[in-house]
Amino acid sequence: QPHGRVFNFSAGPAILPVDVLERAQADLVNWQGTGMSIMEMSHRGKEFESVIQKAEADLRALLNIPSNYKVLFLQGGASTQFSMIPLNLAKAGETVDYVVTGAWSKKAAEEAKKYCNVNIAAKGDNKSLPPVSGWKLTPDSRYVHYCDNETIGGVEFKSTPDVGDRVLVSDMSSNFISKPLDVSKYGLIYAGAQKNVGPAGVTIVIIREDLIGHCRPEAPTMLDYKIHVENDSMYNTPPCWSIYICGLVFEKLLKLGGLEAMQKLNEEKAAVLYDAIASSNGFYSSPVDPAVRSLMNVPFTIPSQPDLEKVFVKEAEKAGMLQLKGHRSVGGMRASIYNAMPIEGVQQLATFMKEFAAKHAN
Ligand code: PLP
Image (cartoon, rainbow, N blue to C red):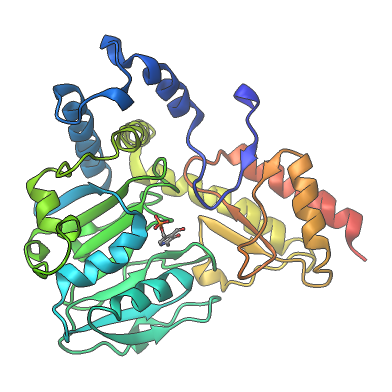
């Protein structure tokens, strides 16, 4: 691969497109003839203003974001949203609904319990998703929170859950901009950038206007959406470099044909791996119900010889395919194949899987 790069299947921080890295490399020292790195510029200057405005405009174009939604570039990771959401969208003692389908939505629910009354409306088993018709939603809950793609378990919602006129809140950290989305069905969408978008350090929040301005007065200023909206994400020094790289990625995706094109490519890539698992005569196994398996994170095991999983990870590494070890809580392997993973990466992995199985199958 160019620059001696390997295929990196990390769940995050994850790979960026190589042409984006090359452009960033040039801009790192002298951005567009200004004599300054983009990292060295004042966030109040016209240069950075143009960078953040273009990043927002391109994201709006990609997702077709309606005009009654604000886009924010925040810090603190998706984890900070776990507390920011209840602090802004519900008062103490009010009820909020959480659907727990894996490790991340569980964490979000645990955090919300500090601030309001949390109803666990449904629970998943890390292999399938509880059907929306069975969710036990509270009639007057302030919002319904769910995670669109559980990065660790590899379960992904294939369509927007219909929760009537309730406020729907979604953690899309690991599948944001991997496919088209009808933003108007949501009250709030959030995503840490470090998987499908850009480098760690920036979290994107898309919030409907009527949900802004209701933060609890005792909450820290930095956790009030209104403050960030009023200051165009520049209440304090923003993560300039991360926002700039996100902007390059948005621009690239628009040029590639937008999110329909990304979805097609992501489906093709995931199919290569799921087919490799299915055609292995049971050597590999995917724990996830095929109806909800993730296009982004593909966990798999070697059920008859679990001791081989370590060998698999080691040998794959020698062959230039890194970070395939499953999350410590589930074991096995996991291939994260976000937008920037080229199809050649998954093809190489599928070939490796076939050869490894042929060598080790009893
Ligand atoms: N939500 C999901 C679905 C994630 O995958 C992650 C991180 O991997 C998080 C939340 C936490 O994100 P952060 O590390 O940006 O706080």
